[in-house]
Length: 269
Image (cartoon, rainbow, N blue to C red; front, side):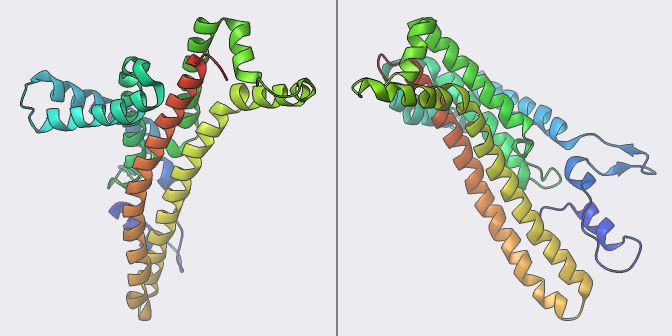
């Protein structure tokens, strides 16, 4: 269920007759403290910082006592890194993929952890459903692959690489160059950010609707107790589906980052 127990109790005990849907406050803030005059904190920022600390602590602990025969933490840490290094970095970037493997692995784990908060009890908010977070990550990737491309090819050489398609009739360049510039230089960070944000936001909303439906049926009483099984089962199924989406979206985001890096470092369009 996406609503915490305290939120659910608060909804059912709300003043007045009839069912009351949760307020926006429950999605962005932790529960009020004491008499309700103090709100704990903005959820997304707390989860962002906490998630970052947990990621650092996990990799520090997994590498602290590295051994030839890895322990459980070392095995998981090396498995995550190896998955991105071999399956994304080297697969897409080739020989130079090893150089970018640490960045891509860190990006994957960060996005996954920020996604997975959406199905963690009490937290129940994917940080990446706040548009500012995917925008920042997409802009970070955008800056890196553009800087890398400019350093290798020079400014004008890089622009030519990204916009000029060899082998087409020259009049077509009047149409293709603006399209390629818009697609490769301007829109890439926007599409990366929107893809991650939209998937996580929509998934979170779907699970929330199913959870609210359960509360509604329970409050209705009578036959509602039996009908509540349907949205409850849907919410559980959606939670497991969201787990898959969390990993898939992190993988797609990192895969796109690797593809854009490869296109910047390539010798031809």
